[in-house]
Amino acid sequence: MDQPDPKNGSGLILSATDPIRSFLALASDDRRLSEELRGIATDLRSKNTVPYKLLRAIWTGSDPLTRPDLLGLFSGSYFVFTSPKPREKSEELKLRLLKLREIAERKEYAELVKDITPKKQVEEPFSSYKDQLGFGLHVGLTMFTGYLVGYASFRALFNRNPALSAAGGILGLVLAMLVETLLFIIKTSKDDQIQSSKSFTQSSPSFTPTTKKNQ
Image (cartoon, rainbow, N blue to C red; front, top):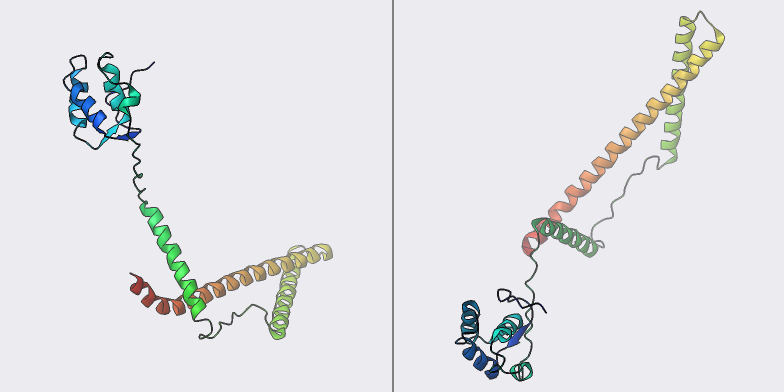
């Protein structure tokens, strides 16, 4: 059986009773115990709680003929449970919680004023028939121009070869279509960024007083 470590006072905590204090008082003068255990017994007899491991170490090292039995020693004593130390939040977690709180407050504010503020109308690309028709004509004209440029370029380069001229026209058409697609993507991305900036600018002044008030 392993002997308890007198330096280890962690684990179960017992309430100090008169039998325990009397035993510790006797143990503080018991020459069978080491100087370290006698010092621990002297220190513990004036306390209201006693670590079980230390008390067991003192009891194990004391004289078996004079020491009380464990049942009588622990009679009337009870376990003392201590609350664990609150875990400190890291700075990163605090910032994340702050952002989540701000988002929740913005949503709550938007829910409160949704019947007062006018609804924002988001302009979608090609939202009208006129826009669709204009874009279609523009793409068609661009592709036709690309075909003509490619056809004329290959016709001049390859001595008016009909097959190569047609291939050059198709290549010019494809390039024109790719350029038009790229320009459309860039334009749509810029419109989304502008719309997001406007929405943030309009919502920030209304939210600022609420944030200061909560602080």
